[in-house]
Length: 384
Image (cartoon, rainbow, N blue to C red):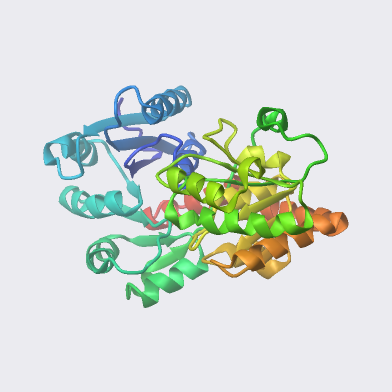
């Protein structure tokens, strides 16, 4: 397909596009929603997924949808990030495809884009960080500072707290960093039958969280917090929707605490965070976050939220005005806050409405696409 010089050509680089993580979903949506009248859109997918896996099937569906929306998709089929031969089609695209902006997401793509954009002399390069703990990993800190930040025209952070961490932990100059909070599309439907699926009757309090079962999410603290909730609401159920490496340990903890059917771990659910529409309280128990897409989805659904005060979460919840904030790793505080919300339906409704209004004003995908479009034009000197 020949390049149309009247439009800015944006190439987005990411490892995978299967709907298995917030960064991947956001990267796809930001690119998909750029105005095709003004932007030529190319998605470059680097990593090969195991054939026949759920992730591979999901990726195929996402790619088919993008192509139907007029987005060009280039798959490199890399066996590993160090398979240099697999990068050849990407370099050819940069040299001969009229690419104006490369926008990479997450550490690996950011690092490789730093190299290939220099080799191909791409006019503008945007690196996008979607948060990490900023603890340990000294080589990553050095690479972010001396390779990624040194090559990128702009290094995007997803929250003011992440910008602070990039400055203090990685010593990246403040002038190199800009903040683009996450945003979401209108929530999907299709979770109305969740309670029936789980065997939770109407009227029984349902507390829930949606996310990958990995250490960052600290679901162990949430399960311990549920034991506290049960002291005041003995019929309450906790559901954690998602799968991941922590599943075995979490099931063991449920058995150890004797919580049995009071804690449900049904695995992955196709409705994703939209399943929170059925929660009486939506919870985020993470030890670190940037700008949590799950929390933003809970906000859009008007759910009362209890969340740990980490990373960009206090900004999302307006310092506690649009949700309840508690310390990380504190099951007594988390469980007490959840029980307090269940005790006061009027307060719960008010928290949900404030959260919904804040999401619509600040964390809508259309707002972020507008900001990103303006940034692309600024970096290339192509006003609009």
